[in-house]
Length: 120
Length: 120
DNA sequence: CAGTATCCTGTTGGATACTG
DNA sequence: CAGTATCCAACAGGATACTG
Image 1 (cartoon, rainbow over the protein chains, first blue to last red):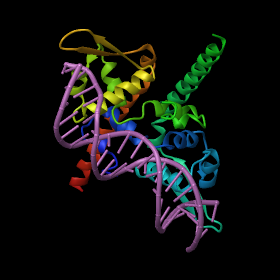
Image 2 (image 1 turned 180 degrees about the vertical axis):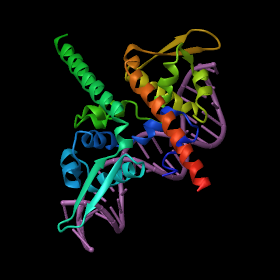
Image 3 (image 1 turned 90 degrees about the horizontal axis):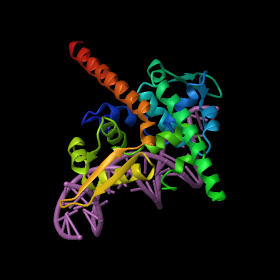
Image 4 (image 1 turned 90 degrees about the vertical axis):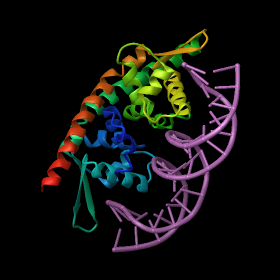
């Protein structure tokens, strides 16, 4: 992953952070894992409409590699794998929560803009 | 850009936000523009080591389209174009500042980890 | 100065099918 | 259940050269 994070080379801290959560589903995965308990692969899958197993696996592996998520395999049949947010992952909570709130507000604003368009 | 923001379709607010600042240099551009005054194209260029004019233009156009940055062309020779953060852009300040602080801390942590590696 | 115009490559992410 | 294995398309992003 040293070369995955090409952005860190010049060394702007903002880049470092944003690059780590860059990926089609990483933010949302973190968001769901921050909600409380740990989640199984299939539970995450259900919460992310449209993601393919391949992609979900990749995003989770990346997050694991970067230390934001831990992966626990239970030796059972059928297999059970649980994903849990780590301390390091938790430290990103303010960012994710801000993104949640801000995004919600923007969606409302966009909605409103559309509505007033229709009247005008 | 409606299709640039493919992530907004399912509608998770976290995705909406992160998608808007997704792009190799957008976060850093916002960061620099939040520093105070407006900046000219060449000034931004100097602050972003390695970016090509083409990319800088694209990132700025995206940010402009999304309402985070305003672009002012002064009718002079040689031309002077100034980029300034908008109100909407300002509303992202908490996120950018968090990313700055958090990224700085992580860089320090990584440094420390490397150092202890060399000792061990 | 502030960009365009071309061209090109690598990575990201999606579709589909299969397995321990 | 929790993934892999292949294959593939699209696009972001980089290199280079040129211009009003």
